[in-house]
Length: 455
Image 1 (tube, rainbow, N blue to C red):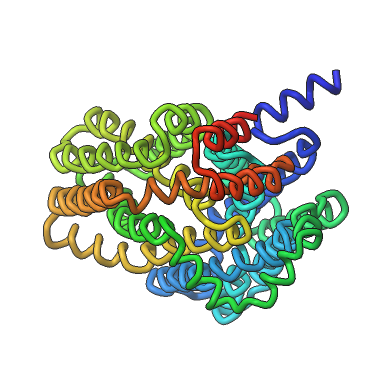
Image 2: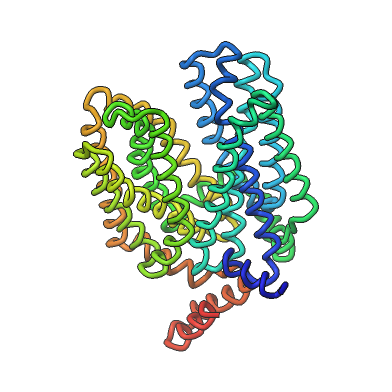
């Protein structure tokens, strides 16, 4: 029975033998992280109003949160690389506990804004993505990263549905205190139960000392200069602008263009979230394996551009759902596959930093795109906004196609794959095979490399 359970966990998590418990705990971290965050979302507008903050102050609070996340993302990725995912997970969960604890104790707007400061290291999802990237092979990496979204979706549903109900029982600040206690609990579990195999491997190989002596700025520059990494990051910023302009104005468009009430808007957003979870769970791995990472991202980007075009002409709710289906699948596919692609392109010792910078691009777009999207919608309407998103997504797709033609992305992807190992103790074997391949570039060396990756 135990063997069957372990086999099922390995199949679901796409992990190697002996890593099932660690992966299960990482997924539990994501569930608790999402539950705690979404517990506080229904009560936050009422708590800010209770403290005398108006709509403008609430908007500044959201911008402050995005700015803090932007600053902290790359730094947290660097911390994951140098100290290991266990240390990083404990740090991010304790930061969450401090944030929600300050929110529970807030008696003024100053403390309310201060409660968002710990968000600088509140990056549980990116740490979890770095963890699964380190312990999965390339074939299963995209699927493993996508499965994390299922755990987040479970936490989001539980937290958002329970937050409003519990506020009636314990009050708004009582809910924030509960979120803080949940975060402390999972941090303690990480300290006791989560192995720090990542750091132990680095100590054995001597990589930990090398990374520790390298400055954060040098590590960042080195990452950007790695073949393919800069291309993916520029692409993510371009497409991220289109997605964020659309997302930041979508609820407003539902209310104004389609005249939906709050309950109906909530159902539409829930439908989109459910599509994203389903895509990550069932489709992402299959599509990326069948087409390849870069071709699947290119196809998804082209699909998103077409969806934006038709969105500009939609005038009915039924038409909206027809457009929303491929749009949600495309955006989810792009996000998950590009995260996996960055983890594969980056040097194994900088995977955490690569994923951190990837998350920072989302925060950067979150600062710039919403005001731009709001201005476009105000001056050009939903159609003008949608056509602008269509054009930006088209430019992103064209950029990726040109980079592929020039060999700036696929060539580096293949190169990394030949020299990089998976997460199940095959790193040294593959590195040695890579060295042999460099010394002898004949048919036999190619066969050897193929054997390594098929194992």
